[in-house]
Image 1 (cartoon, rainbow, N blue to C red):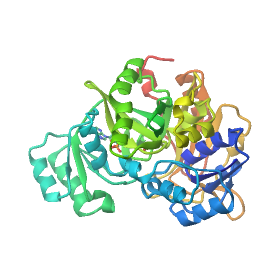
Image 2 (image 1 turned 135 degrees about the vertical axis):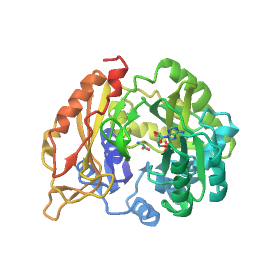
Image 3 (image 1 turned 90 degrees about the vertical axis):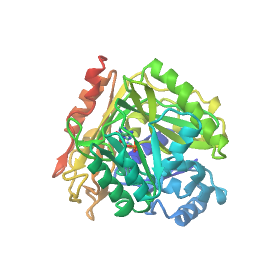
Image 4 (image 1 turned 45 degrees about the vertical axis):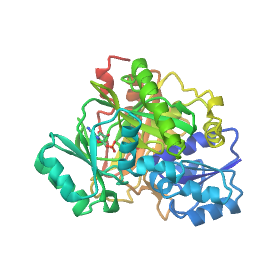
Length: 427
Ligand code: AMP
Ligand code: GLY
């Protein structure tokens, strides 16, 4: 079959790598792709929000399956646009993608259906939000309700910080319309775990757990980023935690969405915090995480395309989703200055060392070709170097070895991805 993947980041390179491995796939296109994806797919220069051009491409090229796992196009209705033209697409329809697109919606859903999450209030009026803060307990978390590239969450230690956060989001409109409404919620502490699930509207199947590292610097210092590295599985996601989440979170979320007339299909991402009062939902996303996907998919044994088709057809219960009994670690290599401003166009050397290196992956996140055909940097997060291993510690050692194989001017990475592994008392 012919498949079209929408996107061009590290997550998409990991998805493309798994799709290309499927026996079912004869031809893979990616719009717009990047210099790494170009090794496994034919890249076509169409933007991810240009639904007219994407559907036209799918029709003209007899695409059997389109795959999209990006928040903006999903929330804007890419699935609906494809289905209106009779095209098959894996992703979440807009009416269910709202679970990520509106934090006000997802918090109200959790309250209504008694799904454990931080206590909160929602505000559309900045003056009411400021008034509420006067008697609220600090620290507190102020979140833009809408999509803000993962940057619309402000953890405020003091009342003054919280007031500034409300002003920034609601009055200065730092993230545009995303701050029209804000969620102000209780600050929780605990370990974070990401759990991704495939969903077909009624059933869900869990992927192996993972953990992201959001801060830019070693020791979780510096600014929040899109994610500087991941490991999978999380040793903190024990059988006991899993049983609790299955009972109180996962199926309840699926049932709640169905009851609201918004059956969820696609990938449902549960951002969890393991608090002293049990696991609670930090956030939902309507897609594969980035860079969680870079450690989860290389460990998946089941054919990804088969699972995606089962999600579309409502037959996920017939799939036996299997993961390798191993571990993976991904170290992101970023442009100097990220997540602030950074230079682009730096030539990347050493990429060929990954050719034929079994168990090692160099997923491209922000790369392109220079006019003379060299692979150069084109984004903040440039590469995600993933390695698998029999244990988390071995996978981490392998990932840091391979992270030295590649470099470019100004490259930087965190040196402590997977530091939690040492605290977990596992291999
Ligand atoms: P979110 O996009 O809602 O997951 O928030 C991004 C990050 O902010 C999370 O991964 C947490 O590290 C942090 N965070 C969000 N909400 C809370 C909370 N209620 N308490 C503590 N940390 C939080
Ligand atoms: N890595 C966090 C996310 O994809 O939202």
